[in-house]
Image 1 (cartoon, rainbow, N blue to C red):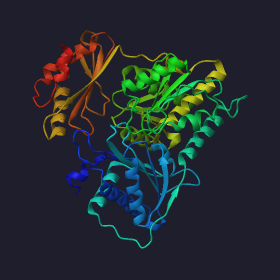
Image 2: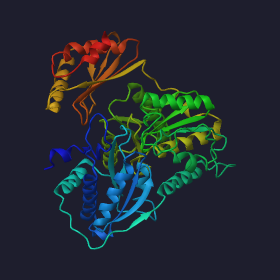
Image 3: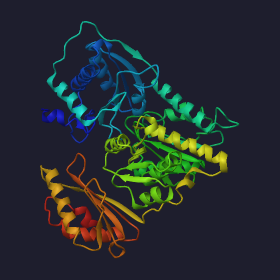
Image 4: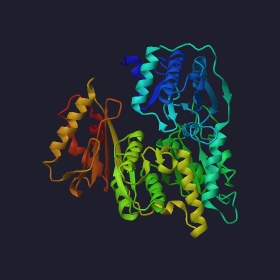
Length: 512
């Protein structure tokens, strides 16, 4: 069984921890020793999975721009090679690129490690692992941590080799070639984005490559792109398409440059968002709507899998406007992706799995959550629409109904056994609202309780669920009327007041 300290490092299907000292007195737990043992464990895990010996295994290693990246990378490389494994040192890379290093012809490494903690604060870091079948699942990470904790690794007489390659350029060329081929521009064949002005905000993460290695070769004017230089202190804003300051920064850039499109990536480029020429955000429900429009044109009637907090307007748009099927599932990008894979395995055609956070994965791209690939699909459609009828990409979602108000509350559970406490609240609330004729519980719901309120009681919906990893109960509410969220909150407070170990102070402040 994994002990408490090793278990702390597991964050679902990733490793996450503290890598830089001096923030809120949080001690470093991603030490060179710990990271080295995890790297060795991944090598052994790969040997067990593939049947190969350690000196036959090749593992690619890349990192984003975090301050601790070089230290962790060196520890990983030293420990893999010490057992005889071979390392392909990719340097600055994106998470999707590292997966692609296991499948692109001519590379096809046995495994890949990406050193990243996505959008978390600069003192954090982590590791993501890939094989050619995709990212590792939670149970795989548990197995790796058990091996690391046991620390029973055989020594090897021969040190493994290290090869340095610029794999991000290989990955970028794959995107460029795809865009050229699919647009098939009659005049600007090699530069189908000629005439477009596109600005990128990389937030000083790993996404700056997209300007020089993708957009410029395709002919786009990228003047005004910002924060492209990697800087792990993230001096300008958090690299996160969900962050308000980050979205405001790219919106300002689009308006200032009078650009056709703005693009924003998270730190390791597995998520993305966009901004239209008027400075309107294309993220969350809007990004899902846009990608659904593109995918359902290619695969009519297929199923779009999303997470649980997507809006009612989005469901209506996918089903009534686009003729697709909306399958609302659990939060967590791996949950959404695995559900789409499961549906396909059962004979239900699904080509897009996408979460409101910006994690989006397509069947045609290994169901890899890849922000750059998502943007490539948007760029292809944008170029084709201009050729066909002179329209702009955001016109595809002009009929999307959006709520008048939306709000998320995150309520702390103040007991150690928070999962059972939260589950009881959800079960009790389900029973409670069934006696209220103003509230209708959603029949198809895979997480927590989702219910709709009539026009006299907020004209909207709420979803109360348990956080995937933390002692929290997020409450998401949307309403089609001004003041509707407050009405729904007011309706829930008397019930939630019965649970003293649930901190609902944010709700009470909100209604006051």
